[in-house]
Length: 111
Image (tube, rainbow, N blue to C red; front, side):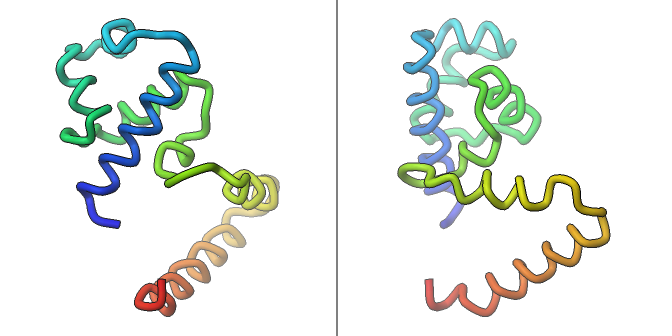
C-alpha cells in the first residue's frame, strides 16, 4: 500500500469513527487544535496526518491506533497479537518484530 492509498484508508476510517460519535468535522478539528480544512483534507485522504495527531485522534475516538490503518473490517487480529504480546519481555517482543519483518519481506511480492 503506497502513501496515497494509506492516506485514503486512514481518512475513511476517521470519517467512520467520527460519524459513530456523532461529531462534525469542525468539532473534531477544534478538539484537536487544527483547522477544519486540514481535518477535512485528512478525511478525504489528500493530507497525511503526523503520528502524534493520529495518536490523539485514535484516543479521541476510543480506538486502537492500528485500526486507523486497516482496510475493511477489523477482524480482531491486531488485538489478538497485542494480547499475546502484552506481558512478554521486551527482548521477546523485539524478536517477534524481527520475525514479522522477515515474513513480510519474504512474502511481500506474493501479497
